[in-house]
Image 1 (tube, rainbow, N blue to C red):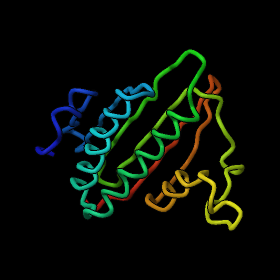
Image 2: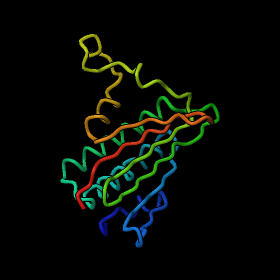
Image 3: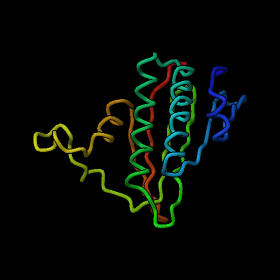
Image 4: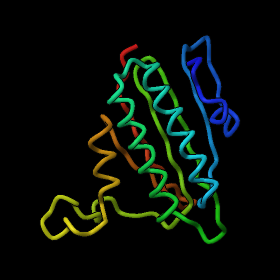
Length: 160
């Protein structure tokens, strides 16, 4: 974890939990150019955490892509009326790299998101983000808090 980008560390709270042998990082990003620039660093950190968890280069990179898709979806579809930011949590344990992305938007029904592989959707730009998240992680789940918004949880098994 020594090669972690200093800018990523500046953007959020990054902690090592020595007794548990885990690592965690939390970030708050707002939609717009500054949030998208910060997302580059958060994605790099997720890839570095995946590598530290024993994922090979491609697996770690694909987890980074899944994270990016979740955050971009939160920026595009999960905006709240008050402009609340997107919150990201990265947690590396001996079992998995777990990523949580929370927005404060209106929420959505994952079952209603069209399959981007269906013939009628091939030319539409919808559903690909969730499709990539499913393909690139071992587990994808959704939580819809009473206070509103969505939480997307991505999990990839590690090999520590």
